[in-house]
Amino acid sequence: MLFESLIVKIALIGVLGIGAQWLAWRIGKPAIGLMLIAGFLAGPVSALVVPGGIINPNRDFGLLMGPIIKLAVAVILFEGGLSLNFRDLRLAGGPVLRLTILGVPIGWALGTAAAYYGAGLSLPVSALFGGIMVVTGPTVIGPLLRTLRVPARVRNTLKWEGIVNDPIGALLAVAIYAYVTYQGPDVGILPITADVAAASLVAGFTGAGLGFGLTWLFRHGLIPEYLKVPVVLVTVIAGFVAMDVMKHETGLITVTIMGVVIANQPLLSGHALRRFKEDLAVLLVSGVFILMPATLDWGVVSAFKARFLVFLILLLFVVRPLTVLISLLGSSMPWRERLFIAWIAPRGVVAVAITGLFAIRMTEFGVPDANALIPLSFGVVVATIIAHGFSAKWVAQRLGIWSSERDGVMIVGANDWTIELGATLQAAGIPVTIADPSKFALRAARKRDLAVYRGDILDEVTQDHLDLGQYQLLIAATDNDAYNALISADLGPELGPDKIVRVAPNPDAAIKGRGRALLESGAPIDELLNRQAAGWGFTRTKLTEKFGYAAYRKNLAGGGEPVLLLKDEQRLLPFASNTGVTAEAGDTVIAYLAPASAST
Image (cartoon, rainbow, N blue to C red; front, side, top):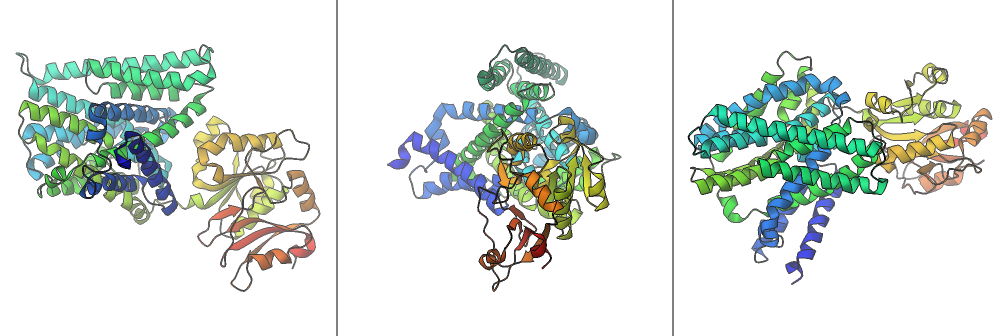
């Protein structure tokens, strides 16, 4: 049969994972939830029709299943570390420190109590599971944050907490497992804590050494450009495996520290490395979240007992809120943001992988209730992803921290044409920011009551102070064709090429074909400024059923052409030289017309 081929299964995992992410992007829903559904359908649900199911990871991959998951988690955590720039801690440093130093022990104690009294687990198993539950999962926090329009402080706090606490939760599980199963003469909290702490220090120093070593090699040109990414990947895997062999789960610390070190070192290839890692992380997350629910079978599902629901309710509505609110008590973070963080805590693959590992070991050791950890961990993942993923936007809106600024437009280059375009958009209800390094060029924009930003948006410091992700569209319209092309090339992978458009270069310019060119005619900025000086202007026309886009185009005269299309939901689509735009009744066309046409 077709689905008996392993290569077909591997291809299907990729199609389901990426397909779920694409569908989530199209419908604006959390990707993690859709990937879980896809994996559940391909696994236990398909087993009702196809013997063994279409995808059965334990059967299909056998002994390789564990290493595959662990290595994927290692790379995901490294990629997460690459996103942890210390400059982000200007806003989130205090809350993250509190959530680590205070939040981990508080969350551990409350989680242990919830598992013991709520789920009815034995105390050793409750302590181990409570320790694992302090993690919030970078594999789920990252995709979730992409869809959230919340303040940068909230995003940075959740991001740092998820990545920093992941290895800490794993180490708590290691320490508790060592304490529960230790059979030597010196059993005790202090010897075991010292052992775990020593291993953690070694892992941390190893990660830092690998990070500094790689950046030194890169800066001195000792590794060619085409080998940098492969060398980094191999180093990540080797460092993780080496530390994991020494002490289980300490490899997570190694790869996280390694990523943080590289992220905070001056490195010419830093952006390329981060982009590649982000792409790789998306692929790995997609695969892991298809494999994870596919490992379930109806026996595991049926092992989920009714009393476990009490634990889930306590985890969602008591453990996490109390942990965050107590930890952030007295901090400068606004209470609305604290409440939002107190609600958001989805668990992901790290929690499941670590729980499954120790569940098997503790069951073999004969610890009571250890076999309940696997169905309970899956219950936590499904419950938290659904509860937090699908409610995050609603909660943020009710708390008043949901930002509509991503409806805005960033226009790079302050000149007569861009300022007039900005004023037209602002009159249509679209927030506009004009960016330019010259304070003199920005004077005219200020006179038109437009928001301005003085600085070079390609400068790393500028990007740290300006969240470009808040804008739905960036228009590069300076008088420097090469700079406009550079903006498209450099920021395109960060923001998405569909969010960037630039004015076309002059016919004699050496820079060609980078990024989408605004206007179907491809008029360069010099031509647009000449038209502006000649009295051209922008108009807004709302299309109707009787007066559609075709009729509108017929009425254009004198070389006038549409520039942007404004949808009812305040979404802007540019009319570009190499893309088509579908205009419908109810849409508003913003056009640039000659003096006679613009005045009518």
